[in-house]
Length: 482
Ligand code: GLN
Image (tube, rainbow, N blue to C red; front, side, top):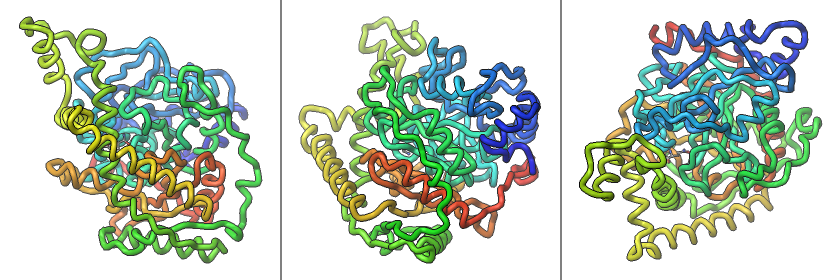
């Protein structure tokens, strides 16, 4: 089997057995040279640098790609925005620091939708990322670069940020495991803020076990992020040994069962997954979640509201390129810098967010959306008294063609229908591959569990992954059109 499929444990064993990390890096570099010209996963890469990682640790021998909205001292951090052109932070994100200290090495900064706003990695200032399985299609977004890097065999794993689904959706579109923990498990320090109450660092891996191994390294309190929680209990070895699902309770949404708005390929995979869980002894519980259809609307009020506040700091003075041609006055100066620095999607979000926070509309929009969010949180708390996990598709569609939704923001936003509720409620959630379509595209399914029940989620997802037993695949240069 090719080395690029090795999981974290195999890589560590190789290095401890005498393999040098540079040899492992060389396999990823080969994939990078073959596929990067078509895929465009990276904004900055370091495959030609010799390995200089920590000499030991649980992640030794692994190489990761980092979404370009995480700080890594000495590397660029553009958020795919002109307004951060040339920004090189002097500090490193806490989760990245923990990965490096555990022996992992970073191979580069990956492409994204500008400031992580989008679902297709088409909204960045530095080009589009393509799906390695079919370059005419999106790899998903906003962490599409990180997803494409791992799917194409250029890295062991990758970090993305998930505010409304930006890791789970691209994981589904590229055949990977995308995991977002409970809010508060992974520090947000050093992740450029988009919508602080919804932002989660999250991971792309090939397996559920690897996602759990990274969780063991990354989770825990951080004095630099006041929303972080005390360290979780260590994951028990028994999580990985489940032979069936007797005693597990799996929730389904009646609204998902009933809707006609799901692509037939996705629906068939969803039904097969549901039946597989039931056949293994899980008790299937149907839940009514009428608020589900409000979640996207609530998100697109709250996220832009928080974004409009977070992005106010890019003023060309503290951050952002200084404009020298606008001397008329401060408002004109700001307008010139920000008009030049922000792309259309970010501009749309700032306008929307400023509007919903304005005095005359606050109660009608932001206030109302916050109330609905609280109701959804209460509803989810009740659900997870009745079930251990909830199964939905990750996305209503298969990976769509590049450009297909670019002129229709609402169609783009609806792609996040199933992923957004986990951000609004802060519950852990994971997308995992469950199969392939006839035309060779990956299909992902989505599992959520209750607040701080991350371990339970890993256990059931791992069982499902083992039971499916999918053979690892790598896109060839030919598939990617090279
Ligand atoms: N697609 C969603 C948005 O555009 C989610 C983004 C994200 O999770 N970063 O806001």
